[in-house]
Length: 143
Length: 483
Image (cartoon, rainbow over all chains, first blue to last red; front, side):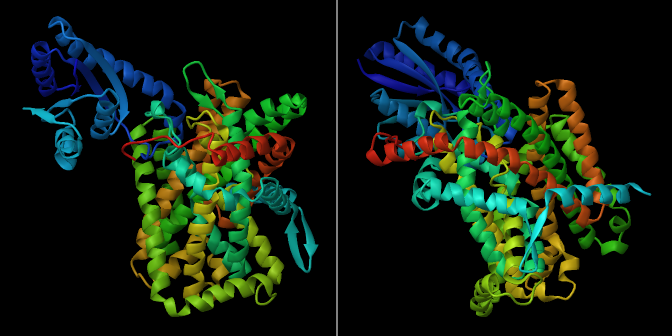
């Protein structure tokens, strides 16, 4: 069974990417790994009190991502009877997604064209375009 | 008698006690400075010159080469270091250096750099302990710093009673340091610079400096009482850029006068050893050099240990290595650049240089090459001062929390006193503010360094042990596809 990685976030485009992946997973007998990356950099600047509570903050970021993003996305795969797994990681979205694709031995990456990054994406480019340029495996960008 | 005069008398009395001095070759040498130098020298030898052997490992740690990928999203080594540096890099780097050179001549720079290098060992020791003996609360938040290693570390060695007493004294002095050097000195010098660029003593702010103090207090209050995170975040983000901008500007001034660079460096070395020109000669240069370096990089005082203890790591020694970079960045790099700027432009030879003191002297040096620089420096000074104040408000709050068992009323009370001190700092003259802030900050080093000596075996075991495991390959770098 081949594995595909789908990048998900809080956007409609991301829902379409999951539907696209699940539909093909049914036909091709793929396993779908849903990945949400919380944007984070080890090189950002923080205040001492932010650092003190960082661990708790990280936990709540992870559980919020689980509840609000991964649970509804996984439900789409569940309904279609597709084998699936859901992961939340912190990091730079494009890099982290390719790392996970490597780790799970994925043969294909599927992402939405635009995410929920808003202004950040407009200025620095989208995760999708970075993945297209960097990934070692085929990338499908869903509009 | 007005409030400023009362304050001056109080400050002088405290400073005379803390800076009890002995006369050596005509210069008075404060014993507390000797205390810190001996600590730095001891840990340099005790840890086998880790300043020379360890920097590569320290840089690799900051770059995340040893970080567990599972810890992504937790406080990184870089973040712990950056937070501590933004609390440390403040007016000590701009005003303190100017004071050192106006009192001790160019030779003071040499001793400052030496003190910075020795301070790396002390800083390494105290920040490792901060992580090793921190409290991890049920919700995963952490409290660390000298209070905790004095109490828990000394208890492990059968000195629980002494440890608790030292921890309480440390916490009291840290509250004093937070109010003095971490607050009043910062507000005082930032106000001085704003007054300078807005028309001097005759300008509007010159006759009403308290307005600036109130302004600082309002912004600081929004952050520390109002919990307005955005202000703190903006400051934390701008300060590193300001620091880089400051260094680049210093470089411009130095390159502008590049033909005198050799002479300036020569003056630093000759002034360090030959007794001429300044009061106290070489010894005088040594004393102010060491004193200003200690005030600037805070090694041996224990304050940075509080900030470093928030890092996510299983190996306390890793943060020791990372913390070692702090005095290097602060003193060996930033202070030296300020010093070179002042020496190369010759502004310190101005007859009223020592009266000018502090920021104003540094500002004049930059102005000789970049006429509009005083305005930029004013902004930099305000930001450095503000970020240092925010950090020290946090240190003071942790100390208050330690003393009063995390009592919320006590912490709020501290915050109010802190803000009042901010305003007071803006209206009183420089000398008493420096006297009081130096005293309080240096007092922290007494309980802290006593604790470091008692815990010296633990310090060597952790640091040398980790270093050996890295060298033997037992601790490996983590493979990162994208770093």
